[in-house]
Length: 227
Image (tube, rainbow, N blue to C red):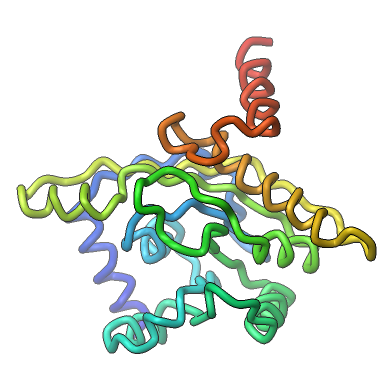
């Protein structure tokens, strides 16, 4: 059944979008890691099963979708994990760490929900906690072109939407200290979000557009491009 569902997803995505994948070499072909990605459209999550052919990729989704029959059906075939987006879910966090300890990867949107404007909104600390607690690398990924209004508008016009997925270099977060944990978690969360923002066009950078860390990252990219 999983092969059928993946084949169906590939057919659907091939029908509705033209994909440009950048930085694929930064996404490991095996082993545990966390993909941290911005979230702008309903197709974002399933898209990773189209782009990366891995059966050990788990994707947390909001528990509200558990009440929807076809989402539950997809969840059983695409490794979706239903989590509470608005309250700390320690049981879910422990399960994710256990999955990574077993060699699986995770795809998580630190924002916790879709951005209504397409621009980045404030990230939540869950992904930073997972990365620091587990010790596994974070792969920042930026998506453009999957806004619901764009995708469904083009479907009505029988047009394919241009979608870009850009992966950045993996990085690790140090273990959380015993003191000032909340402050450190915020710093780690900002680091993850700024790494994503650095891969996005300016109009998508949202609340992180003027963040000092983003300015450092963009300057580093310019220096690398002009040695």
